[in-house]
Length: 119
Image 1: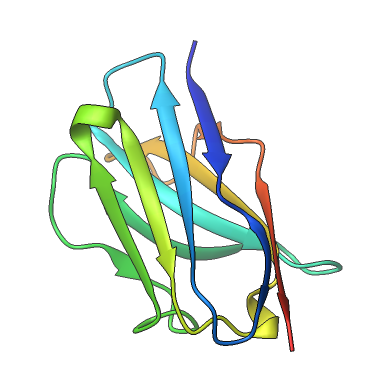
Image 2: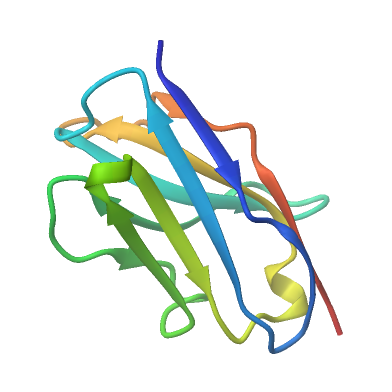
């Protein structure tokens, strides 16, 4: 059974940094893409960025490019989202998700972790 468990959310001030973690278990993820998404109150869920478990560059939404960094630790089966220079508009529930490289849709989702950035 696949499980994705996010952690690391919290309340911070604008300009602060936060690192989210996503611990993955239940299968081998070498053929998967790990994505980060977020959903602000009253808004649709939006793509933040993704990275292939097997390696390569991460991709980012324009709104976070240059501020957020996705990395992975294969030994720990964990993906990270380092968020710097946080803005109030980064507030939302952050989710990690997994999909096969060949698929467009994400098959597995975590429960989400709340990030609140105060001005």
